[in-house]
Length: 117
Image (tube, rainbow, N blue to C red; front, top):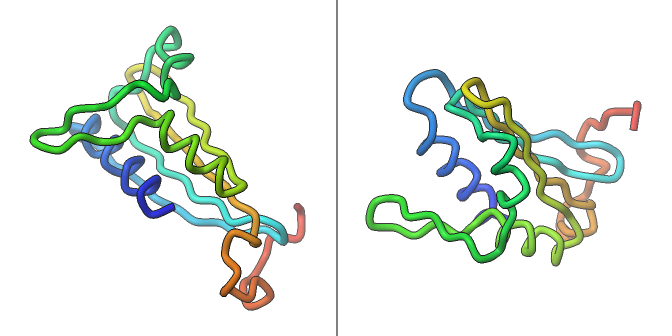
């Protein structure tokens, strides 16, 4: 999961020349979810279907960043998922959620949970 979060943050930083990148974590009674939101240039609607294509690899300087498709595959293998959205020229956001069972060493009852879920 750290690889997924690192990729989401790296992508947000890469495409945000000014503004902000926000990272948040929330918990419900059944899941842990993290979100990355940026005020970068966003993604055109026509590009969204290929956003999670597992064959895409992004060049970031000397480093190669795994595609969001690879990250989605990892998330799903862990019992979670990875989704994203965007408003071109304004923002982009992504979030990934996992069941508490993904964290066997964490006692979920120790965390405040959103009772609306």
